[in-house]
Length: 639
Image (cartoon, rainbow, N blue to C red; front, side, top):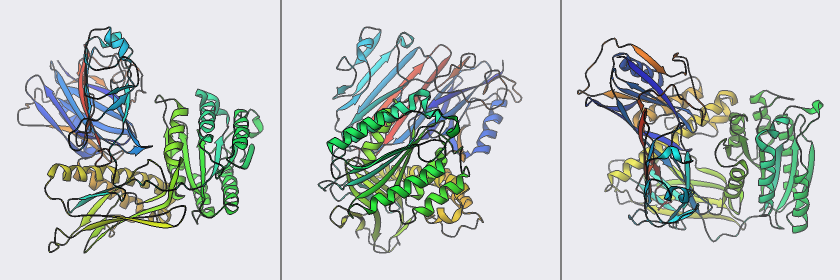
């Protein structure tokens, strides 16, 4: 006869956002989620819990981990519905998606429905990695075709697994589908206040590439076979080199250079020699050079890459790729100085720096800042996801495979058009099959003709010259659903960009970040630029109802049907920690939380913005019942 609080950690795909949170109790009480500043949301949740009311609260822990807390009324039961949407992007000519199938604990039942449609409502074929042979022999109601993994499905999947504990079900199902083509000049949509521009070039000759790989061989790289997986991915990528490309490999640990190979052309003979060199790379076991000297390694690699670039033809793209699992622990360890010294040495942007860090060990904030300031992209290598080698191979192939364009910029223009707060509009490189998506807000005067065109002009360097692509459109006022999703997609992308910039500004300083970001409000009165970034992100998150890391959380607020069952209800089970204490507790992915979940309810699943990749999953167990729906989003690109 008391309230109980229970917590579940959800691992959701990257680029996911929470859009709806509801609770349904057995006495008819329904509560709906609202986004508030994080402290205000926490206070609301605890206040409702102490009054014996059903309530739910969700916040972001990191880029793919969400914490969900649920309050169960005295002698009551609560169901929770959580809806999330995901921004998807075309890479290597296909769209990959991930669907969370079960949470971090065993469940009794799983109901799973999945379909993929284009913008006209036509069903598209898709592949998912799911072993159906095991399921066909069990108590499973299924409407599927195929009996093996990597099965292609031409129609929706419907699974109802009533004995889920008897199967080794994946926590995440991975799938992929091929979208319809984007027009050669791009696709532009606007409702007069929001715009989305998609661009994916074709029929362009690839550019020669000068690669410089900087590989961490410090002692920590031996754990979880990180070094072996990185070596495997590099060997796979070397096969994509042509004689027009060149390659250098540098390893480092407690000093900037341990071993060095290259610079050599991408001929068959040299590629064979490079593979032999990679196969012999080992973790440093000399205690005199233990640690990780990121500073010296980056500067030495950058000087070599710049020198190599000067020896190549003008249309060659110079790329430095860093793969590491560490923080700077030897030599210069001041993160701000490391980032600034690399930036100062590469101010002309001649070398594009891409960084890959093993999630949980690498200093991803530093690696992200270095890539951000030097025309590159950073990405985490995720634990417990696909194997490390596959993730690295996918990144190299999609970001740096067949490079068609460099120094890509996009400009939105039109008569009396004002563009504000656009997301990333400059891309260092663009590989074949990789899609560029720009989102932002536009301002139009009331007297402007709605039929006057708005243009998106993309400019980039090709192997031969500078080339322009132009696409135009008029304001679309006839589709309120598309208009709403345009704004939601923009808010999601822009907040992610702002949070990333704010983290970089906190140790890089304002001057550098100011050169990389235009605020929607140029008249911010805050003394620190990072505070202006925070203010814009917070304001946008509240307006768009978006849960943002460190800024906002979503908490359910009761309606008039909900009556206080106890003005001072005791909270006798507090699932925020294993022992009932109210200290912060964050169970790791896959960690058992038995003993916490005594009578709670929970929701888990997946679906899509315009009906492209739609799925829902309903999960239940004897002590935990939960349904989550997930929406993955793209406009024309997924179409």
